Length: 320
Length: 275
Ligand SMILES: Cc1ncc(C[n+]2csc(CCOP(=O)(O)OP(=O)(O)O)c2C)c(N)n1
Image 1 (cartoon, rainbow over the protein chains, first blue to last red):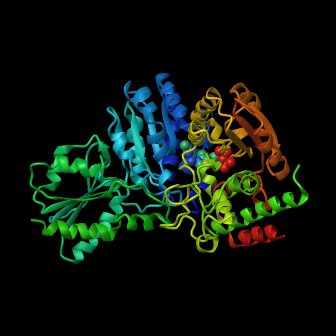
Image 2 (cartoon, rainbow over the protein chains, first blue to last red):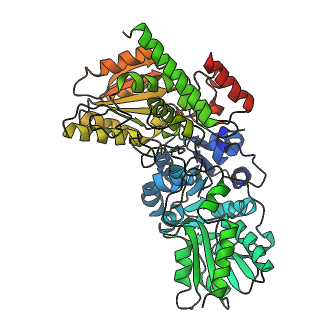
Image 3 (cartoon, helix red, strand yellow):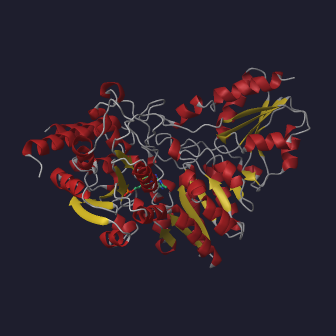
């Protein structure tokens, strides 16, 4: 077992594991799938692909920028490359390579950001991606996937592989419960209702669906009916559906484990403009992260835990 | 040549640093043991022999600077700082990576006096060190800038941009120390991503190059003293080291890059270091 797992036991439904397994599955069906890594394969779980298809696995060394443009070159040769490193380096270090080499030409490269948000709790600010959603969304031609659990990770990776164009897939480091309703299907751009409700709609992406579901359960015990709407892709996003799901609600809450600047909060507020429906925001409020003893401890500290969602739900029902 | 007592003192300090490293990491928590221990002897020589620094005046203008481009080895610098008296050891040694602690997973100069730059995203520290060296020269200061780089980290392109800048600007106050422990996060550097003839490359990039045994305090001290005689070019000290050095069960083992210690391993490490 890798030392980079931070002592965590990898459950079968860890996003990283599901991602690695899906890569192997897709690689078995399609010989054009190639995988690139920057010395974190035992953490990103691209190591599973390395074991299965060593000839189609490129260990690029700790060189994310070169890896990213090199992947662009593989795409030019008709391959479907998946690049792997932590989200903070995938989106940040290699930003210009993504923008210039890949996105302007609409090359078929899949950039996978592992250990996103605060999920690398011990390593602190330099390793915690709070801005990846904003900067990847800002790149034209980019599709931005934000799966909520291991099941959805598999669906997102499949959808990304089938799509001809640049993609960013944001994955969490730590074990997550299975919550994605498989019967709902999976369509890029379409919000998924994880829970119905009439008073408030809580919009989330990525791991925040878990806190939102727990909060909605607690709210119900207080007599508040809260819907939980998960956003599988921040971009593209069906604005009509976002608006429809907010109809008749007293207020909405948006919560994300990413910066308030340029994330889902701003997007939903923009989409709901003119509807008169008040929006309560929850995000990383324009600050860097820091080291903590667990992911959960940091989420509580930055007011992104279930208790904090509940407070916002309460606020949203009494808003004018 | 170091006097025998001096040599012994530096070796003792290296041992203290290793004890602090193990104590900070503790039991059952991830910590960068390997790459911190490989630097312990070098850091001992820097802080307790070579560098001009003053724990009571951490911002003193004339001080020498030490930066960790391989910021994940932060705890080796934390150990040297606490042994020097920059902050209280007893109060802090058990707070590594705890919420609110000044001992972050990676060095943060806004949180801890004695840290010269924020590093952790690999490949950027040499650029910071070179810029710092250029700035100190502009001010006519004699200060030296020491920067430690990992051999896996050398894959980052920015490192080589920085090397070119260092020789272009004739930064003879800059010393790049390469911690050649032969391992990176996922295995042996030689298996994962080969960097080739390092000495030849560094010479070609305009450096004065020395290769030393990075665990021989005398050799390290000598190489650092020798560096002071070099003019108009930057100096590179390639230190051959063992990842996890001093902790027998971790020596040369990739999984201790950022692994956890069991209670038995923790006790064993401290027992060996006490000997
Ligand atoms: C830009 C960047 N990419 C990846 C990482 C993750 N990472 C931390 S340490 C490490 C391996 C470093 O290897 P090396 O430079 O040889 O250091 P050492 O073995 O001496 O610890 C990696 C890949 C990082 N911190 N920064």
